[in-house]
Image (cartoon, rainbow over all chains, first blue to last red; front, side):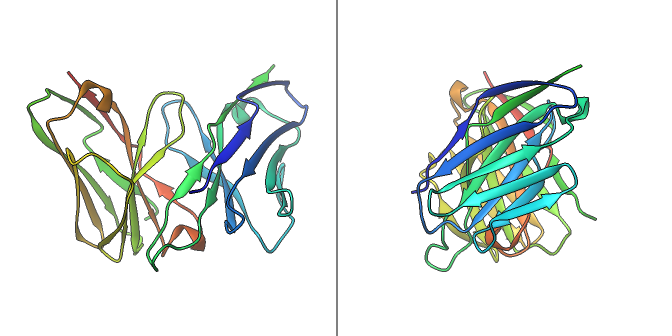
Length: 116
Length: 114
């Protein structure tokens, strides 16, 4: 099955600086890579996703890049703000198995701390 | 309505009890999921239902029994649980499959097994 590695496990940055979180995946057939943000005591929520037919996607201060050859993808947050403090999970989807629906394989998460 | 609603929010049960977790969505999504999340860990997939049929069971012990009565509802029946089963149980839904887009999570049911 799919295996997703995520680094770093904790990242502390000064408010206003950029943050980068990196993930690698093992299954070359994976073709959907979302990023979820989970604030303390809250549900995970999708912040951005990318499919294997594009190399980069941007949404305001957040961007994701994908390198299919190297099987890694990264989340970039610019001009960080206190409300960016949360745990961020990368994920990858396996190909459909037997025609049924599938679930996501998550990385272990990165605790992003924004220092004022 | 873009909500996935889970009940109860908190549940405490003994190892001999039988209880159920419930999940509901009214977004017309055809795939629904149960995930288990331990503190400071990522969600772990337990079950996937696609068009009300169980399509994936990730080797979950039989003391967890899922049920999908209709396209809007998902239940997780709990019986003879162990203390190590204490966790946050997240329900999620997606339009067709994960490949088609966002996974919408509920707020979770926090389970404590005594």
